[in-house]
Amino acid sequence: MVGFRKTKAAVWPNPVGNEASLQLDLSAESLVTISVTDLQGHSLRSLFSSELSKGAQSIQLPYLDLPSGEYLLLLRIGEESSIVPFFKH
Image (cartoon, rainbow, N blue to C red):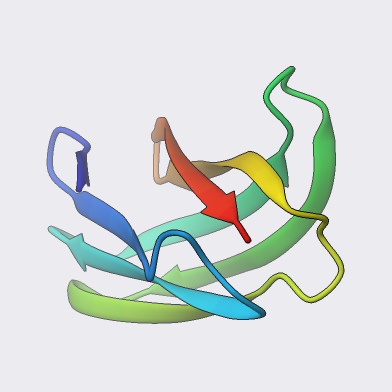
């Protein structure tokens, strides 16, 4: 689980199949944006952007057309950002 100063996040399952979910525990209502990048930091797609309420959240993430390999989720939660690695099999 990756920790922000006030938020924890994890991808499940990891490695992912055709879809996965991102588990978040938000300390306050926040704008959450999620995108996928390759290991070189090239943006592959935007997956999610929405205001979420405080507390536990589960966001479904489809990965139907990504080839097998290692990727990064770029998470922006309010003013904070972090990277969560994941594998696609």
